[in-house]
Length: 68
Image 1: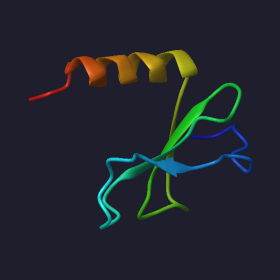
Image 2: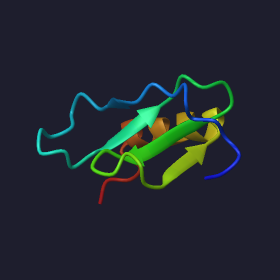
Image 3: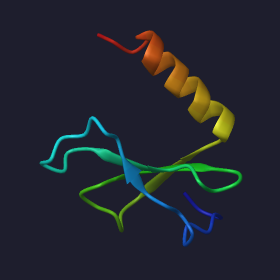
Image 4: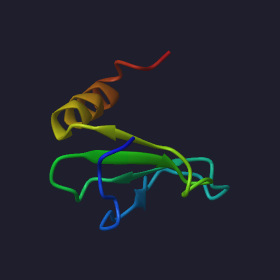
């Protein structure tokens, strides 16, 4: 992900994440982007989503759309 300043990102893990660190972190405090990264590699690559796309993803998660 390029072109975004993530220096003010406030990263958080899900309340449901495991203590072994196998989870993602989300920063949703930025105005135009929701950033996602691997908690085990905080300096590694980051994915970016529009706030609208992220809300759609969360709705799908809650509705079970991605359950296999």
